[in-house]
Length: 220
Image (cartoon, rainbow, N blue to C red):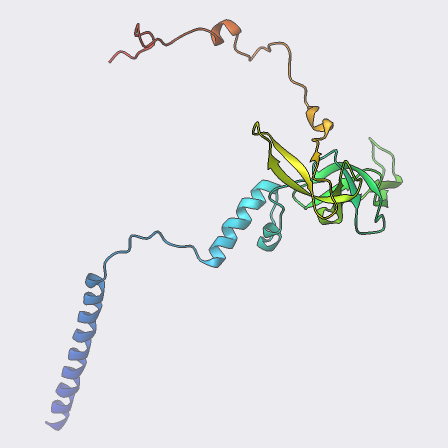
């Protein structure tokens, strides 16, 4: 009899405890109003999104730390006259031959030369060749067209709304840095004659819609 009484007493306490826990869960679910704020991605999720965006831009995968350090707004252009401010060619000037935006690097024509061993193939000869190695963009500065000294590059707008680059920094002239002429030359020239897939001019200039006469309006 004593065992039966103890079993009933313990079971009753467990039943009350379970019912109380269930009631608390239901109350917490029904009383909390749904949030209207959009979900905020975590720091790790933002890193994944950031890395994926830049890996698509540069054509390959890279870490989120490397993607964060990419230069967003380039002020050094192909064809600029620059001075090397660090490295073995410090103090020498040259022309930007190529801008590698996916690596924050530039190639200066005839500077930072290295020996490169190239294996021969059916289309080219092998041997030891001297080539220009890339330089980090922070190791070069654009030369002021007036003073001839390295300077920082700023941006301003003229009265007519044209966006130009200007020399900035201590001891600079503040003059406009002209855009390189080489950028005006297209790698692929524009076609001057109509091709087989081009729309004829008579169809281009044909008027297919007139609001006054109802021409071109759909039949409803």
